Image 1 (spheres, helix red, strand yellow):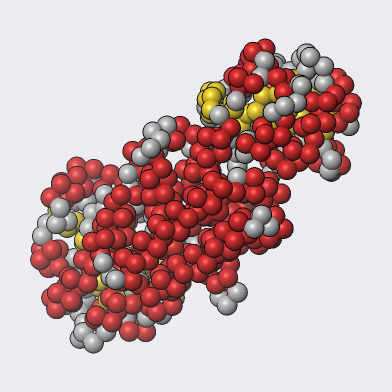
Image 2 (cartoon, each protein chain N blue to C red):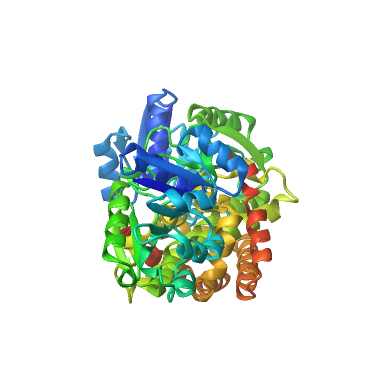
Length: 280
Length: 280
């Protein structure tokens, strides 16, 4: 099996490493419009060769899009125009609805499977790629009734090789869920970083005091703008809904603190503590 | 040296373990108004015995208050009324200004050192106590010009035994800094937990999808209400200032996303990424 990985960063690179090592792919061919990323991927060795998108489409059994959602929107139709019946395409994007809408009437829609492996780190680029990144995590397959059984099967086999469990969901629900368990966490961290960086302008030593709590809450603020800016745009409606709820919750804290209502602060924190029961 | 630890939870317990192990204290005596905590501390073995507050004050060379700030406000004056010239008291509370104001004119003020070790975890109680919790972190000493040199020296030696570096600051600055690098992170996490828990009411399986990013951002939301409710009240002014800035930053994201202003979203994230340069 030849797997073409389009986008040789954290996600594509990590998939490439384990798909080769665990013998799902005999050969990994890589495509990246950034020549430095491409050469780095070759140098690290997680692709057997780099080539152009056209060359990849010509030769691959599976084409895996591990690029920002805006880039996937731009090239998925072109790929579907070109592949034959025995070639399959999957994306790894963090938003699904717009991409699925874009190709829903394409004659080769059945050869496409929309997937979202729920794994990652705050780092990006080929040097961030790592073995076992996906192990034990969930991957979401969306609107699979629109894909050929064979396409779904082979992609399921691919993600099982990455030791992931598959969850099925429609694209609309996916985007809503992703807004709650992933996108809002990122906005929360980005805004926290901006808040404290503002303060740092007058006070150079503030970060001397940062303890483990701050570091973990702000960790996601290291995530890349290239990846996250399109996600927030493509999931606008859901992200705004969650963001409004989040701001409301912060205002509840604001009001309770402002009123020195210790009982109400206590109650809010105690409610928040219930997160323990849902996170192992 | 006999050290009395008042409050046998995460902070006091962790200090007790290493102060004994590293031979700063020959004997640790423990006080906790919660009889289960006291018995547990004895059972774990990080105190040599438990006793009443009066017995502890009678016998200890150093009295360490590792209790919520509201509880410290209630007992510090009583302790200062009772100790002799060769006994020293320090608190480990996360807010300093109110406590320092409370005792500023006390005749034994000079035997008190206000300290805040910037370390912790989201867990609490005696079972959360651990060796090496403080290693490599900073501890803040406030308004030390009001304390005897001997008092500051002995407490410095104590924290150096815990492998902490001492930073000196006035109580007012401390509370402002703590709002930025600690208190706002907690509110941000508590509000995130409340947001997602709200959603979970209609959708039981949402947490199946939570990935590492969500877990790290929401980690602090496991922190105890008993500890954090008084911190937010006692640091009201600073916390409200930071919280208002934080809500403003979130609104900048809201506006950019609402306008589908990809460039502005990109710019905000790119600015937030500068957090990389200030965290290790």
